[in-house]
Image (cartoon, rainbow, N blue to C red):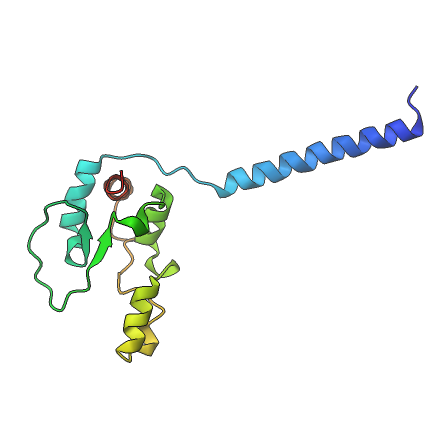
Length: 145
């Protein structure tokens, strides 16, 4: 028969393990694993959807740009080196969740205070099919590899 002190210790141990497992499950749920797609197909989507009008893509050869003035946002450089596929997907689907400080500063200097917090990039949530998003994200992710 267990002594009351040993029973209490065993109870705390079971409670500790249960809380640890629940905390681990919650942190695992918060993480997503964005699937890998076809980077070459993603490059085609990058061009087809007009992403190259505002973004450069490393050393990738892209069509000539017909926008002026042009705000060029480099993809695949040091800024994006630590980005995951999840980060790229979120930026495509919800561009306002993270707006570059350089852009905010440029807009404030131009006197466009009301738009400084919003990204000039439109959301692609209703534009891209899931497979297109997966391929586009794979292309963007390949730029830093």
